[in-house]
Structures are given as structure tokens and as C-alpha cells.
Amino acid sequence: MKLFKSFSFFITVILLIGSNCVTQTKGLMYDQGDTNKNSKNILPAAERPELYLPLLKGKKVAVFANQTSMVGANHLVDVLQQSGIAIKVIFGPEHGFRGTADAGEKVETTIDKATGVPVVSLYGKKRKPSKEDLHDVDVMLFDIQDVGVRFYTYISSLQEYMETAIEFNLPLIVLDRPNPNGHYVDGPVLEPKFKSFVGMQPVPIVYGMTIGEYAKMLLGEGWLSKEAMDAYTKNVMAAIYPPGAKYFGLTIIPCGNYTHKSKYILPVKPSPNIPDIATIYWYPSTCFFEGTVLSEGRGTDKPFQIFGHPSLPKNLYSFTPTSREGAKEPKLKDQLCYGWNISDTPEEVLKKVDNRIQLSWLINAYKLFPDKSNFFLSAKKEKLEETDYYFNKLAGNGTLMQQVKNGVAEKDIHKSWEPKLNEFKLTRKKYLLYPDF
Image 1 (cartoon, rainbow, N blue to C red):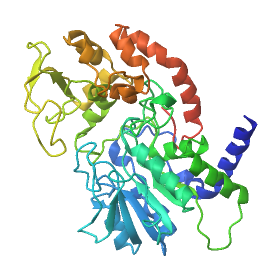
Image 2 (cartoon, rainbow, N blue to C red):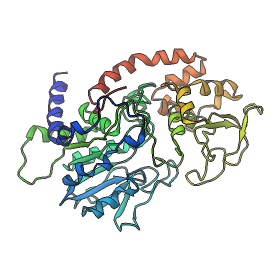
Image 3 (tube, helix red, strand yellow):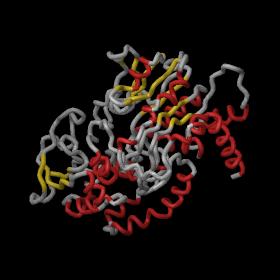
């Protein structure tokens, strides 16, 4: 415990050194009395070039970006090139740099036709940049729109990008973006044994933080890899660098006019199967179906708002998943399914979600499903462990699946989350950059 307290002190020091842009621009971050319900008033950090271009001038830059990395109507990469910034390499996450690949589809490394810059996939043969990728780079930049849900893999990509920056002693700048689910915190907190790329840290499913705040928490809580934290500690202990030397420092460029009460409508869909804000609001509740035999709606016009299975009662809503961009081989492709269509206007969905993960659809689907022993997807092996169920990786524990099987009431499931949620909320508060909800 003494070591951890000492370690936290050094983290604070390096954050003050590395995040001086946040300190200097604090007065520009938000109007304390504004609830910012109008998305048009909110400025993602990428739309505040006066705060980050001076940090990139004369530097050779690596950019982690995708189709959401927009500056108004222009892509960040184009804006940087037009501003005279030398981009040496672009990194792309799940779904690729242009955001068209299926969920889980491995993406190859290419040359971007529009810019001529090499694009290295970090969701293909590797998940971290190599030494060769960064051999001619002075600073690393990250700008990707998140949806504020633990099993959405962009925060896992952020973590591994941060670890690389520390290991290679390169400064990292994160251009913050609003969290469309940043107005509440809910869900089971992930237990360590269930750690995977769809959940790497002990946070709830909805964690109520922007990607910049989350980056601060990863560093401040020492949640990065052992290799990265050892390198970070060594660098902090040294704390002496010759003039002109490159060294890791975390700089968060903040959003403008944003608070955690803001209702932010994304101008670009963050991935092929998250097409609109209503889907984003439902996603924390309905992505659980990815861990079951039911279709979660991929291959329909309303992914994560339509779900069902051929063996459910035929008096329910019917639909047929088909192959389409972003869902070339959807679950239950070309099969007539019966289930639910919970799509609605964003305003009505917000009322139904009511700042809580909704479990009634999952519970009801399990009750109605005839072959309950095969409802939850698992690895193909004789003796199954809790971690062999994809559902448990999404949930972050083995408890929720058992609660559903045992018929535990939704309100009691929510109550079981409260102790760990309350602990997380205290941790979360330490890293907020914007007024809370």
C-alpha cells in the first residue's frame, strides 16, 4: 500500500508535466452553468486545432484514427496534412481506418489512397505498434470516437496504444471526444479472471467517462501492462531528460462546452453496426445477445434493437438477418427469426433506458427459449470453465449468467452490482475533466 501511494504521487507529477495543455486551457473547457443539451454547442478536441497544432508543428507524427476522426466535414488526417504536419504512419482499430470491416474481422496493413500514408492495422496480425512502425516518429496522437461501453473495443485499443507510447518513451496526445453514454454509470464491474479485449479493466459496462478521462484513469490507477508501468516508473524516477529528448507524457486536449449532462449526437456512426444514437443508447443492454445463440440484429436495419431466434414463439416480431456491409456473415443468416423490435426515437429510448442497463429482454428471452442448455454460447470442449462463455466476458463475471438461469429478479441483479459500482464511482471522480451529472 505504501508503494502504491508513492507511485500515485509520481503519476500526479507526470500528469501535471505531460498534461499542461489541460491545465493551461481549463478556462476554455466548459461553461460551468451550461448543461449543453445541444450537440451543436459541443466541440470535440479535434475541432480545437489551436490547442494541439502547436504541439505537432515540426514533429513527425503517428496517428491512431478511423472514420470518426473528423474535424467538422474534414478528416483529421487531411487537416493535419494541410496544416503542414508530417504524418509518418496511421494506425487503425477494429473495423479499420475507414470503419467498414465487420466486427472481429482482421484488417490488413495498406497504403491509404487518399493520403499516401501507410495504414497499419492494430486489429489484424498485431494489436500494438512495433518498433519499426515508430522508428521515425516523434509524437503519437489518438483520436477515435468512443461510445462509453466497456465491451466496445476502442478503449482496449487506447490502452495498448498508451502502453506502446510508454515502452518506446514517446509523448502521447489524446484528442478527447464527448461520451454519448457519459451521463450515467451502471453494470457489473469486471472481475480480473474475465479480462479480454472486450473488457480489460475493473470498470462497469457503462463507466461514464470520456476517452481522455479514461486514459488518465488507466495511468493514474496503474492499470497498464507490467512492462509499461515498470518503464513509466523508471522514467518518473529519473525525471531528468536532456534538452530535445523524446519522453512519454500524457496530454489530453479537452472538449469544449461539454459536461456529463450533455446529450451528444454523433455526426458519424462509430462502427458499421452502431448506425445511430438510439442504437448507442440500447447497446449496453442488448449487446449481451452476442453471447447467446440469438441474433443481436446484425444483418438488419436495426442492429442491437432487433433480436431473436427461429425457435422462439412465432407470435413475436419476425425478421431475417441477411448479408450486408459490416455484417457479411451475421448470426442466423437468412433464417427467419422471432423476437423483439425495440427501436424507437432517441428521446423515447432514453426514457426506456432510464440511466440503467435493461435486463428484461435478456431474462424474458431465456425464459421463452426452449433449449436453455444451449442458450449461452461457449467454447467447444467437454469441461467448461466460466471463462469459456463469451457472455461472461461481456458481463465481466460469471454471476450474471447464473442469475439469469436461476430466475433472479432484475431489481435484485441491479442491487448485487451496487457495492462494486460505488467503489468504482469514487475512483472515477478522481479523473473527471468535466462537470459531472
